[in-house]
Length: 72
Image 1: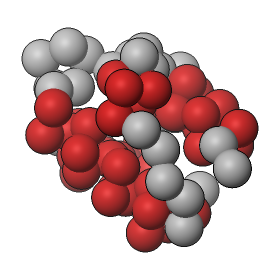
Image 2: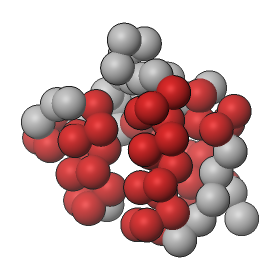
Image 3: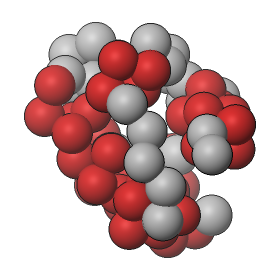
């Protein structure tokens, strides 16, 4: 999980220590570029593909984790 959190911290422009399951995805930073970057990160770390539509519905890091866990 730490590789994912480190990558997500870079995408969201926050410190890695700030990335937790409860971290809210702010609309200002959680834009289409962040979503595309997160899709690439998920593919790299978990070898999974998620849709941009599903990812755009996520409101917290925990939502992303659930999406990655449920996607097959």
